[in-house]
Amino acid sequence: MKSVTHWINGAPAEGGSGRTAELFNPATGEVSGHVALADVADVDAAVAAAVAAFPAWRDASLVKRAQVLFRFRELMVAHRDELAALISAEHGKVHSDALGEVARGLEVVEFACGIPHLLKGGFSEGVSTRVDSYSIRQPLGVVAGITPFNFPAMVPMWMFPLAIACGNAFVLKPSEKDPSASLLMARLWKEAGLPDGVFSVVQGDKTAVDRLLQHPDVRAVSFVGSTPIARYVYETGTAHGKRVQALGGAKNHMLVLPDADLDLVADAAVSAGFGSAGERCMAISVVLAVDPVGDELVKKITERVDRLVLGPGDDPKSEMGPLVTREHRDKVASYLDLGVEEGAELVVDGRHTAVLGGGTAADAPGFWLGPTVLDRVPPGSRTHTEEIFGPVLSIVRVGSYEEGLELINGGEYGNGTAIFTNDGGAARRFQNEVEVGMVGINVPIPVPMAFYSFGGWKASLFGDTHVHGTEGVHFYTRGKVVTSRWLDPSHGGVNLGFPTNK
Image (cartoon, rainbow, N blue to C red; front, top):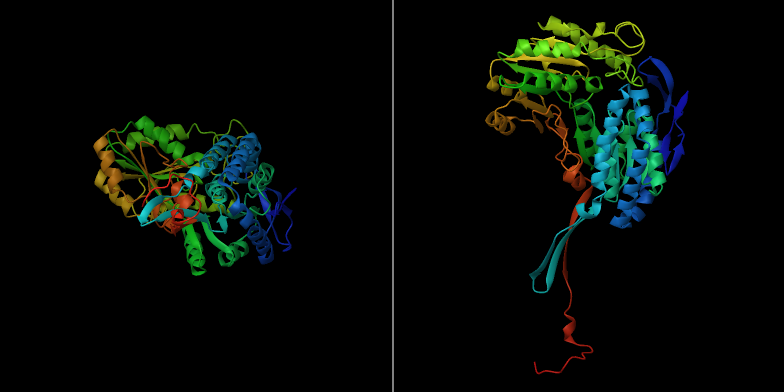
């Protein structure tokens, strides 16, 4: 069995707590190893190493930082299959999906390689007589990232490339459910030439989280996870004087107008609803079908769902893997019966889906639940409004664009949404009126490219700064304005010029 440690001051570290947690293979349900759980002293050691490393890294030239980032990017590309295999083994997602996660994370690394341009300031000459003013942005110091289980490589890469490129030292606290990817990335940072202490990893649970939120030397904290924990991280971190960006949960709706291409919609709904077994904050979990397209759309979705292949992440034939833990699988599965109790029709029951290797999701070893479709879900029901975070797609029938928009805007969350239509005017109206941070027009999962910023509205974001893009640069730096006056050297000294009367 493998043993996953911390990474502190440029090397693996066992830690001194003696506490560990079990790691599982979600496809079999078997214990695959153990991960160390940090105590306060372990976190303090990582932060102390970061504090010591920060001054020299802050003073490293922008070109030097960019060179390290370029080397890290090349090493990540070379090791992407190894990284994807670690993700599949601990999270359960299929290998192709894990490779896609790595690729999207690398987009932020590539964006951060442009740090010499991203940190350019402004200059105004002659704001007063012989007085100039200019603005610069400087790193904060030690910053931390607390990341979720569903994207153990991509979400950390939303944070640490820009934080490190801006001159900070970074401490990562990944999910204890799938921690191995973090150690591989730490090893690649060292190989790329990053000085020891600039990037550290502390494995752990709430003990590690709380210490990072309270530690006086941690200047800022980035978080991605559920809304209750995001609220806790934001309130606790800010109470201890930290800058915090905390991204929470979601309940993303796809509004389908009657003029939409229903084959395109069905493909998009299945892809966005069941990719990564629905364990992503940008998954489409609710389809708002505007009459009269509901019956035909549900038929097309069902046809596609019936062809999906459920199996282990390391089997090339698998299109969807298991859920991450038994407890989470059971929680997600409970919504199937709840939906029926609330009046929905269970069109596809994922508990009966066949699993590669034998058996169905209900009786195969591992944490299985196949793609599930609930039709005629009552608006406002728990199945409609609560974040399920699994392969459950809810179809809500609505009578008009206005009714669909009202349901989206009336929800607790505001992370992502999409509209499917061939009417440009309707699409433009939707992007203006919908109260959601990321909007797709005939695009089901509108995750922005790295040079734009990611983040939602309402209970999907606590704090005022989104991740990556220019907002990410601003989050990991603070502005300084310098006003300078220099004496005019013409007041005296040697002058070999032709003498003139003045």
